[in-house]
Image (cartoon, rainbow, N blue to C red):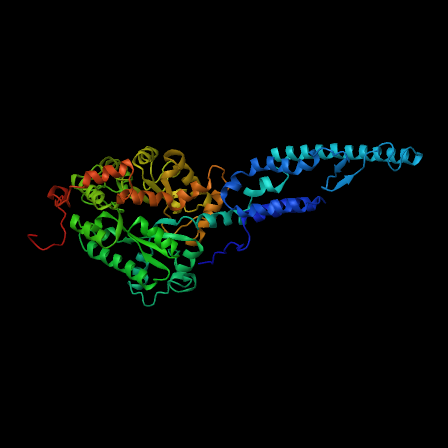
Length: 551
């Protein structure tokens, strides 16, 4: 794998420093002198360094013109103090009153005429300066001229936007909803961690360096400023009705052991509060998500044990139906598939019980991979917000793995979130995509559901085709910096996308907040114990698990 060139770092340069330097450079290039007061005022802006300054760039231009033009508008004093275009003062004394020194001589008259000519020359220069300012203002209006106003969103000030993003990610954790590294550890190392050097650059180590499925290590997580990561406890659909429960337990185990191996860099987290605590301690908050309801073996007791072991979301299906829910393949059946993938028409009765038990536990319901009808049914049944841990917008790429607009509207009512996938096939429906395709999906979800309902769920280490510009986990800041060019994305909006939206959903699912929705969830389940129902033989439809007879 080719090493991705990292963006230049400007450790001692803030966005406002760059802005201020551009302002001063502009005046120096035009041979204008900037006095000490104006330098001081400009430098004082360096106390502010957030995206709001960039957002106000155009309006700030008007204020800048006002500030630059102030010297020219200052009224003359009785001593006729005039301001030159470079900010210097030319002081000409008024004619002396009668009886004072220098009265009534030809020399005095000559001096007076020379002074009047000088004042006229200064008036002409003053008018020329005013005209020049008007030309500059007009230039600003059409997008050329003073760098302070308009170059903020150009590639030449990428470093300024990256500094803004860095500050944002020092205030809120960047949360990614899905990473498949644990399955790669099983494939490559059989879950044996003694030879796994996660703190080193895996692009330089076999077999990771040769795999198009490898995008993650601690070195790049730090570069990407990842504050929290959901690690996927995934097992293949082929294990359904066989040993899927055991395999899932082994994947949960390897996640926990990996976190334990790197206690200074990672921290196992099971609550929204824990995300913030780990983030503030400088460690990657590490959470567990079970990818695929087939991992349950159709047992609510297993679901409860997964929760006890730290799993905080479960994807209802993977690329196969479970005995109680249809997967996305029901919306895109193929003649090559060995079975009819429209089995339940969404959720079965037992599927409804799975949702209710997850609500009771405080476990997030993940609707990535499920059919559209399963999405509808789950949104009708759930009492808590749901997530799509790694999906994109169907309107932009007609893949059954993506979310249609009518579901996005229901999601906004539900309070949930779509965490956008970075897999090329879900972005452009081809093998190639770019960072801008990801932004298009983010903006579409925002336009339909709202800015409170979109997040990031790249799917790294589980995808083999990544967008240009987002090749691995180190590239998240580049995505956010590019979004910062769009004036609709304020710093608070970027914070929501980066992680605040997911933390909010997590809190509501946990029932830790006191808004109306969470009170409803808590009250609904306060007197309800665990669901003890078994899946019906009708749901199993003749399929059997390897179980001891009579149990």
